[in-house]
Length: 269
Image (cartoon, rainbow, N blue to C red; front, side):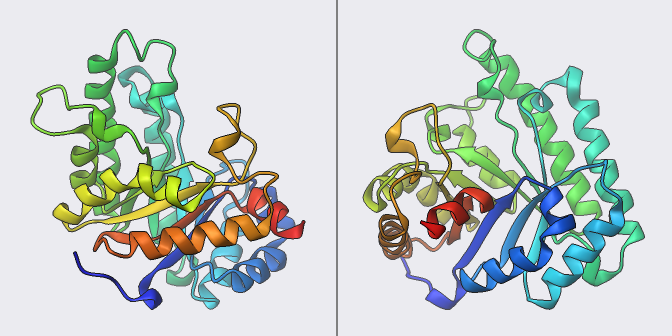
Protein backbone atom coordinates (compact mmCIF):
# COMPACT_ATOMS: atom_id res chain seq x y z
CA UNK A 1 0.00 0.00 0.00
CA UNK A 2 1.20 3.47 -0.77
CA UNK A 3 2.42 5.91 1.83
CA UNK A 4 0.94 9.39 1.90
CA UNK A 5 2.87 12.61 2.30
CA UNK A 6 3.14 13.97 5.82
CA UNK A 7 1.85 17.34 4.61
CA UNK A 8 -1.53 15.81 3.78
CA UNK A 9 -2.02 14.27 7.23
CA UNK A 10 -4.55 16.25 9.21
CA UNK A 11 -4.88 16.82 12.92
CA UNK A 12 -8.36 17.15 14.38
CA UNK A 13 -9.88 17.53 17.82
CA UNK A 14 -13.32 17.27 19.39
CA UNK A 15 -14.59 20.43 21.10
CA UNK A 16 -17.59 19.55 23.28
CA UNK A 17 -17.63 22.50 25.68
CA UNK A 18 -19.34 25.20 23.63
CA UNK A 19 -18.93 27.90 26.29
CA UNK A 20 -15.29 27.96 25.19
CA UNK A 21 -16.15 29.38 21.77
CA UNK A 22 -17.91 32.26 23.53
CA UNK A 23 -15.13 33.10 25.97
CA UNK A 24 -11.92 31.50 24.69
CA UNK A 25 -11.78 31.66 20.89
CA UNK A 26 -8.31 33.22 20.89
CA UNK A 27 -6.98 30.52 23.24
CA UNK A 28 -8.48 27.73 21.13
CA UNK A 29 -7.01 29.08 17.92
CA UNK A 30 -3.63 29.74 19.51
CA UNK A 31 -3.58 26.13 20.73
CA UNK A 32 -4.66 24.98 17.27
CA UNK A 33 -1.77 26.85 15.69
CA UNK A 34 0.74 25.41 18.17
CA UNK A 35 -0.47 21.84 17.56
CA UNK A 36 -1.03 22.15 13.79
CA UNK A 37 -4.76 21.45 14.16
CA UNK A 38 -6.62 21.91 10.89
CA UNK A 39 -10.00 20.45 11.79
CA UNK A 40 -12.33 20.89 14.77
CA UNK A 41 -15.39 18.76 15.49
CA UNK A 42 -17.54 21.37 17.25
CA UNK A 43 -20.51 20.39 19.41
CA UNK A 44 -23.87 21.84 18.42
CA UNK A 45 -25.53 23.72 21.27
CA UNK A 46 -28.89 25.07 20.18
CA UNK A 47 -29.02 27.31 23.25
CA UNK A 48 -26.15 29.36 21.84
CA UNK A 49 -26.96 32.17 19.47
CA UNK A 50 -25.81 31.28 15.97
CA UNK A 51 -23.71 34.46 15.89
CA UNK A 52 -21.32 32.75 18.34
CA UNK A 53 -20.78 29.91 15.87
CA UNK A 54 -20.49 32.31 12.95
CA UNK A 55 -17.86 34.36 14.74
CA UNK A 56 -15.85 31.31 15.82
CA UNK A 57 -15.96 29.55 12.45
CA UNK A 58 -14.99 32.76 10.63
CA UNK A 59 -11.98 33.12 12.93
CA UNK A 60 -11.06 29.46 12.42
CA UNK A 61 -11.49 29.79 8.66
CA UNK A 62 -9.05 32.69 8.65
CA UNK A 63 -6.55 30.28 10.20
CA UNK A 64 -7.31 27.61 7.55
CA UNK A 65 -9.12 25.40 10.08
CA UNK A 66 -12.26 23.61 8.98
CA UNK A 67 -15.06 23.14 11.50
CA UNK A 68 -17.52 20.25 11.42
CA UNK A 69 -20.86 20.22 13.23
CA UNK A 70 -20.67 17.61 16.01
CA UNK A 71 -23.55 15.99 17.82
CA UNK A 72 -25.00 12.62 18.70
CA UNK A 73 -26.38 10.25 21.31
CA UNK A 74 -26.81 6.46 21.49
CA UNK A 75 -30.60 6.77 21.23
CA UNK A 76 -30.31 8.56 17.89
CA UNK A 77 -29.83 5.16 16.29
CA UNK A 78 -33.40 4.21 17.20
CA UNK A 79 -36.48 4.89 15.09
CA UNK A 80 -38.41 6.25 18.07
CA UNK A 81 -35.79 8.93 18.78
CA UNK A 82 -34.87 9.82 15.23
CA UNK A 83 -36.71 13.12 15.60
CA UNK A 84 -33.81 14.25 17.82
CA UNK A 85 -31.37 13.56 15.02
CA UNK A 86 -33.75 15.29 12.64
CA UNK A 87 -33.86 18.37 14.89
CA UNK A 88 -30.07 18.66 14.82
CA UNK A 89 -29.91 18.20 11.06
CA UNK A 90 -32.57 20.89 10.68
CA UNK A 91 -30.56 23.22 12.92
CA UNK A 92 -27.49 22.64 10.74
CA UNK A 93 -29.54 23.26 7.59
CA UNK A 94 -30.93 26.54 8.96
CA UNK A 95 -27.50 27.58 10.20
CA UNK A 96 -25.87 27.00 6.82
CA UNK A 97 -28.58 29.00 5.08
CA UNK A 98 -28.13 31.91 7.49
CA UNK A 99 -24.32 32.00 7.29
CA UNK A 100 -21.76 33.26 4.81
CA UNK A 101 -19.22 30.91 3.23
CA UNK A 102 -16.51 31.65 5.81
CA UNK A 103 -18.99 31.11 8.66
CA UNK A 104 -20.36 27.77 7.48
CA UNK A 105 -19.58 24.30 8.74
CA UNK A 106 -17.55 22.19 6.33
CA UNK A 107 -19.16 18.94 7.37
CA UNK A 108 -21.43 17.01 9.71
CA UNK A 109 -19.70 14.82 12.29
CA UNK A 110 -21.92 12.39 14.16
CA UNK A 111 -21.19 10.47 17.34
CA UNK A 112 -23.88 7.81 17.72
CA UNK A 113 -22.80 4.92 19.92
CA UNK A 114 -25.83 2.61 20.18
CA UNK A 115 -23.77 -0.19 21.70
CA UNK A 116 -24.03 1.84 24.92
CA UNK A 117 -27.80 1.24 25.00
CA UNK A 118 -28.93 -1.23 27.69
CA UNK A 119 -30.68 -3.49 25.15
CA UNK A 120 -27.78 -3.61 22.66
CA UNK A 121 -26.78 -7.17 23.53
CA UNK A 122 -30.28 -8.62 23.38
CA UNK A 123 -31.58 -6.66 20.37
CA UNK A 124 -28.41 -6.05 18.40
CA UNK A 125 -29.66 -6.88 14.89
CA UNK A 126 -32.77 -4.74 15.32
CA UNK A 127 -30.76 -1.81 16.65
CA UNK A 128 -28.20 -2.09 13.84
CA UNK A 129 -30.96 -1.94 11.22
CA UNK A 130 -32.36 1.20 12.86
CA UNK A 131 -28.86 2.67 13.13
CA UNK A 132 -28.44 2.16 9.39
CA UNK A 133 -31.60 4.16 8.74
CA UNK A 134 -30.26 7.01 10.88
CA UNK A 135 -26.98 6.98 8.98
CA UNK A 136 -28.83 7.22 5.68
CA UNK A 137 -30.72 10.27 6.96
CA UNK A 138 -27.42 11.90 7.94
CA UNK A 139 -25.71 11.27 4.63
CA UNK A 140 -28.75 12.36 2.61
CA UNK A 141 -28.88 15.66 4.52
CA UNK A 142 -25.15 16.21 4.15
CA UNK A 143 -25.33 15.64 0.40
CA UNK A 144 -28.23 18.08 0.07
CA UNK A 145 -26.18 20.71 1.92
CA UNK A 146 -22.98 19.91 -0.02
CA UNK A 147 -21.28 18.98 3.25
CA UNK A 148 -19.06 16.04 4.07
CA UNK A 149 -20.56 13.40 6.36
CA UNK A 150 -18.39 11.70 8.95
CA UNK A 151 -18.78 9.78 12.18
CA UNK A 152 -16.99 8.14 15.08
CA UNK A 153 -16.85 4.35 15.18
CA UNK A 154 -15.38 1.87 17.67
CA UNK A 155 -12.34 -0.07 16.49
CA UNK A 156 -14.14 -3.41 16.87
CA UNK A 157 -17.02 -2.59 14.51
CA UNK A 158 -15.52 -4.87 11.83
CA UNK A 159 -16.36 -7.86 14.04
CA UNK A 160 -20.09 -7.28 13.44
CA UNK A 161 -22.03 -7.88 10.25
CA UNK A 162 -24.94 -5.99 8.77
CA UNK A 163 -28.31 -7.70 9.37
CA UNK A 164 -28.32 -8.94 5.75
CA UNK A 165 -24.77 -10.35 6.18
CA UNK A 166 -23.62 -8.60 3.00
CA UNK A 167 -20.67 -6.91 4.70
CA UNK A 168 -19.10 -6.06 8.02
CA UNK A 169 -20.87 -3.21 9.76
CA UNK A 170 -17.72 -1.11 9.59
CA UNK A 171 -17.46 -1.64 5.83
CA UNK A 172 -21.08 -0.56 5.44
CA UNK A 173 -20.36 2.60 7.47
CA UNK A 174 -17.25 3.30 5.41
CA UNK A 175 -19.32 3.02 2.24
CA UNK A 176 -21.96 5.46 3.53
CA UNK A 177 -19.78 8.18 5.03
CA UNK A 178 -17.15 10.37 3.39
CA UNK A 179 -14.76 9.63 6.24
CA UNK A 180 -14.74 7.99 9.65
CA UNK A 181 -12.81 8.43 12.87
CA UNK A 182 -11.96 5.12 14.49
CA UNK A 183 -11.83 5.45 18.26
CA UNK A 184 -8.59 3.51 18.69
CA UNK A 185 -8.36 4.34 22.35
CA UNK A 186 -5.16 2.82 23.70
CA UNK A 187 -2.14 4.29 25.50
CA UNK A 188 0.77 3.42 23.21
CA UNK A 189 1.53 3.93 19.55
CA UNK A 190 1.77 0.22 18.84
CA UNK A 191 -1.51 -0.57 20.61
CA UNK A 192 -3.37 2.27 18.86
CA UNK A 193 -2.23 1.10 15.45
CA UNK A 194 -2.97 -2.51 16.33
CA UNK A 195 -6.64 -1.82 17.07
CA UNK A 196 -7.05 0.66 14.17
CA UNK A 197 -5.46 -1.54 11.52
CA UNK A 198 -8.55 -3.52 10.46
CA UNK A 199 -10.60 -0.37 9.85
CA UNK A 200 -7.75 1.27 7.96
CA UNK A 201 -7.51 -1.75 5.68
CA UNK A 202 -11.24 -1.71 4.96
CA UNK A 203 -11.08 2.00 4.18
CA UNK A 204 -8.06 1.39 1.91
CA UNK A 205 -10.13 -0.93 -0.26
CA UNK A 206 -13.07 1.50 -0.31
CA UNK A 207 -10.94 4.51 -1.21
CA UNK A 208 -12.21 6.42 1.82
CA UNK A 209 -10.48 8.45 4.53
CA UNK A 210 -9.98 7.17 8.06
CA UNK A 211 -8.86 9.25 11.03
CA UNK A 212 -7.41 7.63 14.13
CA UNK A 213 -8.93 8.84 17.39
CA UNK A 214 -6.76 9.07 20.51
CA UNK A 215 -8.11 9.49 24.05
CA UNK A 216 -6.68 11.95 26.58
CA UNK A 217 -9.48 11.99 29.16
CA UNK A 218 -9.87 9.65 32.15
CA UNK A 219 -11.66 6.42 31.24
CA UNK A 220 -13.72 4.07 33.37
CA UNK A 221 -12.74 1.28 30.96
CA UNK A 222 -9.21 1.00 32.33
CA UNK A 223 -5.81 2.65 32.47
CA UNK A 224 -4.78 1.35 29.03
CA UNK A 225 -7.46 3.38 27.20
CA UNK A 226 -6.13 6.90 27.65
CA UNK A 227 -3.00 9.04 27.90
CA UNK A 228 -4.50 10.78 30.91
CA UNK A 229 -1.81 11.17 33.57
CA UNK A 230 0.94 9.80 31.31
CA UNK A 231 2.53 13.05 30.23
CA UNK A 232 3.16 14.98 27.06
CA UNK A 233 6.29 13.05 26.09
CA UNK A 234 4.50 9.69 26.07
CA UNK A 235 1.70 11.16 23.98
CA UNK A 236 4.05 12.82 21.49
CA UNK A 237 6.04 9.61 21.05
CA UNK A 238 2.89 7.56 20.52
CA UNK A 239 1.45 9.97 17.96
CA UNK A 240 4.69 9.88 16.02
CA UNK A 241 4.70 6.07 16.05
CA UNK A 242 1.06 5.83 14.99
CA UNK A 243 1.54 8.31 12.17
CA UNK A 244 4.54 6.39 10.84
CA UNK A 245 2.76 3.04 10.93
CA UNK A 246 -0.61 4.25 9.69
CA UNK A 247 0.93 6.19 6.80
CA UNK A 248 1.42 2.89 4.99
CA UNK A 249 -2.36 2.95 4.48
CA UNK A 250 -3.77 5.04 1.65
CA UNK A 251 -6.87 5.68 3.79
CA UNK A 252 -5.01 7.24 6.70
CA UNK A 253 -6.11 10.88 6.83
CA UNK A 254 -4.84 12.00 10.22
CA UNK A 255 -5.08 11.94 13.99
CA UNK A 256 -8.12 13.11 15.97
CA UNK A 257 -7.50 14.00 19.60
CA UNK A 258 -10.27 13.42 22.14
CA UNK A 259 -10.66 16.01 23.25
CA UNK A 260 -9.48 19.63 23.14
CA UNK A 261 -9.73 20.11 26.91
CA UNK A 262 -8.12 16.80 27.87
CA UNK A 263 -5.34 17.23 25.32
CA UNK A 264 -4.57 20.71 26.60
CA UNK A 265 -4.31 19.46 30.18
CA UNK A 266 -1.75 16.82 29.21
CA UNK A 267 0.40 19.35 27.37
CA UNK A 268 0.30 21.76 30.31
CA UNK A 269 1.94 19.26 32.67
